[in-house]
Image 1 (cartoon, rainbow, N blue to C red):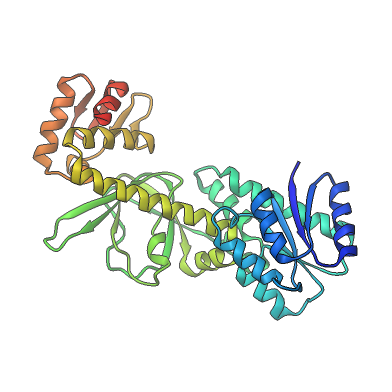
Image 2: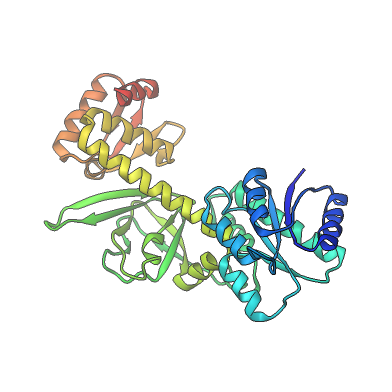
Amino acid sequence: MKKIVLIEDEKDIRDTTSEILELANYKVFTAENGVKGVKLVKDKNPDLVICDIMMPNLDGYGVLNILSKDPETSNIPFIFLTAKAENSDIRKGMNLGADDYITKPFDENGLLECVEIRLKRSELMKKGFKPDLEGLNEFIDVARGIDELSNLSKNRKIKKYDKKEVIFREDDYANNLYFIIKGKVKCAKTDYFGKDFLNDMYGKGEFIGYMTLFENGEYHETATAMEPTEVAVIPKQDFLTLIQKNRDVAATFIKMLSNNVVEKEKRLLQVAYAPLRERLAEAILDLKEKGHFHDELAQTIEISRLDLANIVGTAKESLIRTLTELKKEGLVDSNGQEIKILNEVGLKKVFAG
């Protein structure tokens, strides 16, 4: 049973709305003001919040502002219940991150339809989407939520790149977000001496280029296709509008950014302190985990020795020596750019030290 927190200072409206929702098989918790409402949301962790705007002590805008800044409550769909229907009031609520609004007086069907749509959209965002173009279109369609974004998923440009072809370059102005439909992409940064440092590798179903879009500046790295690759190109302004207008989408990318930062911090610590054997074993396992297979059935990964050396933070020669050691121990086999995992349990033991 889905849980809803209803925050409304007028008792008659609060009781009537609660009754309608309960008859529709929702579990409803009510609060008569914004202060109690915030505490109730934090305590009950509901699936949806319905909140009046005009309330004493803490109005609906204040409630939404507080909930939006708390990671535990920021993803909860939020609907304003209000007698105010001025465009400026609606715009203010939407800019703060509200998902929808219902104008008083409302009819039963309108209320239930709005609640059902928001819960369904939230559920779809949580479950995730297939890592392909169909999944991307579904993600965008579900995430839109407002008429202004109706064109975002239409006429999306698909671009094809050959192996070693550059998708975007470091210091290019960031105009687009890229979604990988198929293939693999590496993102590398060039240091002062002209040496490339491999930041990360991405595959089917992943976004690249989103970090710089928030900064309104230039790409910090160069993205290159590692094999024949197809990407969907999403214009910068469409992406930023989507982020600004939909809290579910914003939360999805915040999680993505957080994971990206944590992973890079972890890698830097490993480069600084972990032995090369451990770093190499984890890099191979990580590539496997991310699905960077040349042949998934044979557990074979394809990556150049230079790229792998950049990932683990060592010279190519040192990497080749260590890879040969792992090969002699029967943990992996290697031939050219291919690395085949022979003993995953043994690699995990190396990584664990």
